[in-house]
Image (tube, rainbow, N blue to C red; front, side):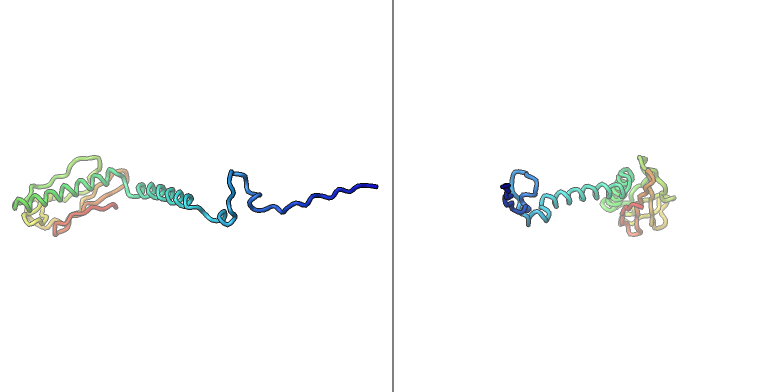
Length: 153
């Protein structure tokens, strides 16, 4: 009489058993989401990439440095004129790595009350001084009230 072998009953595969063996058991409900470590890594990478992109879009460091330097020089001359209660000397452009595209044609000086004037003593000096380097431009803007600011163009 032929003998039949009965196959052994097997248990259905579970999620835990079908995962690769990494040395510990992970609960199936935790395996669906993202971990805090993954979120921190993603935020770090996005921060680095956006920082690089922002730096590249803001302009040449030479133009930025030249604009800041010129603006601080103009502010220092205005401050000296106010503190000494006498007009500042005529401010002349400095040579640097950035190319000077425009400068007030009659020069720039400050009166003892801090208002800008041309070097020949007349007129309010509402001025925009343009600097350029590597295809990027920056402007140092001097208002008629003596405020000085710089911006990228």
